[in-house]
Each structure stands twice: as structure tokens, then as C-alpha cells.
Image (cartoon, one colour):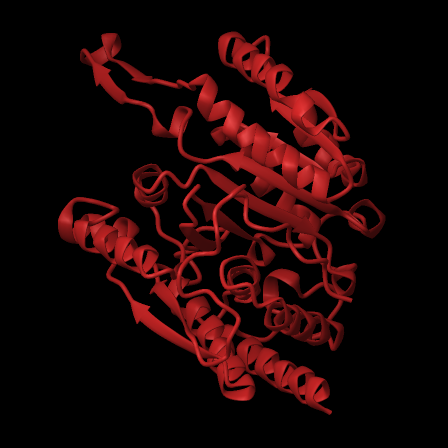
Length: 382
């Protein structure tokens, strides 16, 4: 009932990070950044499920918590990514762990990805059958959707220099968008390999008329590397058409690869296929095994502290961490099965309420997920 497992880590030749074996006696290191807004609430649900997994299976997890991020950190230090949090993440990565991250605003995510060269963001878009009555799309439009967006994550517009000049009516502003051929080729190779592991179809998103030089670079890079994965079918789409087609007929897509800003927009649009941005999640990866897992939504300050946030996207990011960084697919499957059972019973937060007569809060959804996970784990032991 639950969506299929996400493809493996985008790295090509590296061994699993240190401390990520499969022996139950080994502790897996989870660095936690609770984030801001609804972040601490949804992270708390994810950690309660992680504790339950550990208690039920004997698998040990060492959880360490880092400092403030995003706008909260900016107010305290002037930086969204503080030296403290940067060093915290570096220590987690050095010890073979991965980071579970709540939402953080401002420049935090862009500076984090740039600093650690988390060049690849994977955004799975899969429809949960129990949510056919939720969201704004017709059920038949989202049914059977299974798309993987591969977003170039450490270059492009979001990582270029910016500034302003002049004053008054003469004031101007600029933001530099730049890509190198090797940056484009490495994300295309990752996307081609992932497409080869899935259904063998890759769409490359550009905008030749509006962004001609960068689009030409991506096209030339695709020509250069596509032959390395000859069984993968490749085509290009302009970003505006890709956004329309993704919502109108998602079943035509397998893997989509795109520049940084295009991937940001398509990922958010694609969350409509899952009923709500609260259901969305992603993983950010570097070539040496560094990984940061997060929701694909923001801090939702309007919901913060009101017990109204949907924690499922954060829980899915935890499942992705278990599968991709720690190589614990059985535990990831158990989490996803628990989510599917909970939704099938009609337990919904307000954003995915659909035809259900009532909606539950964040804490009640967490309790329902824990109850479903307990059933799944007991069934596995029976």
C-alpha cells in the first residue's frame, strides 16, 4: 500500500558512510536540527517514531541536537547558518551520521547546501491511495503518480552573487546565475543512473529562449554524458510546459532533472500530487556521503505552536534517512506502512482532511502513527 522505496543514494562509487553498517549492535548517529516555526513539533513526532523503532527492534540510534537555524539564527547571530550549526553538521558527517532537519528560513538551506556541496536533492513525488479524497486535484489526475525530481542543489541562481546599486528610481538589483560544465554533468550522471534503476526515462528541464546560455550548457552536457547510460530514454522540456505537464499528466514522468530554481518550483508544484505540501519530503546529498533529510515545505509560522501541522512529510524524510544513509530498508518500510495504515483509517490533519468529518492535530497524528507502527512491528515478529 505504501509508495515504493526511493532510489539509492546518488553517489556512484563511495562506500556507505562510516557507522552505517547493518549490525543491530551498532549505533547510527542522527544529527537533529529542530528548525523553526512548526519544525520542533513535526521533528518531535519523527523522533518519537525513531525511538519506537529502536525499542522494538533493538537497533540503536544516537541522537544529537544542534542549535537554531534560519530566521531564528539570523535574529541571534546575523546568519541563517551559524558557525555552531555548520560545525555540528561537519562532526555528524565525519562520524558517519546524517542530519534530520526541520524547516529553516532565510539563507539557511542555500548556505548549508553550498558549504557542504550537497549538490543533489532528491524529491520523491508519490500518491498515497488513501488520500484520493484530499487535495485540489481530481483523483484520477494524481492516481499512480511516481516521479523522482533530481534538483541541482549547490549552484545556479540561488548560489550566485547578488547585490544592488544606486538609489531611488535609478536603483537596480542583480543576482548572478552561473553553472560550470562539470557541475551540470555530475547531476545529469546522477539522474541518468537513477532513471536506469527505475523505468528508464529522463526529462531534462531548461528554458532555451529565456535562459539561452545556461540551457545550451545543459543540452551540451546531456549530449556528452547520455551515451554512458544508453538504455535511458532522454528528452527535454521547457520549464513552464514541464510544470503544466507534471500536474496534468504525472504518469508520463519517471525522473526529472533540472537546475536549482526550476527544481525548487517543480518540487513545490508536485506536492499537489500528494494532497498537501505537508506530505512532501526530500534528501540532500554530497558526493562523499553527506546527507541532510528534510520536509519540502517551509516553517508555516501561521501554524506554529497551534498543534495543527502535518508531521507526515517529516516522518517520510526519516524513512528516507533510514533507507538511504543507514541501509535499513525494513525499518523504512515499516514507517511507510504505518503511514499508509493511519491514512487508510481516516486519521487526517486539516490539510489532508478531504471527506473525513474531523481532523486531528499534530500530536494526535503522531500518536496514531505510533499505534500503527506498533501494529506493523508486532505483525513482523509474529
